[in-house]
Length: 159
Image 1 (cartoon, rainbow, N blue to C red):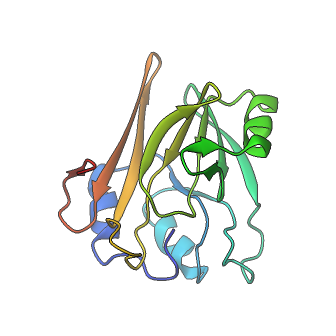
Image 2: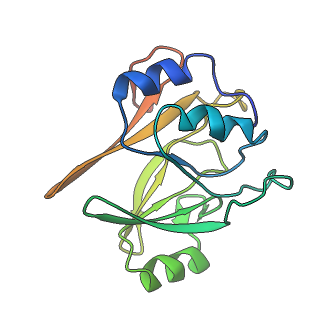
């Protein structure tokens, strides 16, 4: 979630990681955010609940990146549980990972046999939540999910 205002250090931090792709799980806000991110790597984005004026962006996307098939969607969980309709989509697409946004809560979990990853939010702070983004690193035999603080540049772990 960027809500039109990514944290000022976001581009610098992402650029140092040299990603192969950037996923945006909705609540883009101003579409120029996607153009700015696309200067760093190809962007895959879905529409969030605030994105009423964002055109040409789907509500749900299935991606094959490396050995990983994933579903990208804005709202996927209810608390720590995967919503039934999202689990159905993931199973139908044979996806092992759901990447979502909406809550701004950084989260890594497994529900209904599917890994769920909320990378958090790099937009304006909501409540007392951290301003973080997530990374997905994979090899043919391993997937590593992590969160990174936009404020410190360091790996972020829950308190």
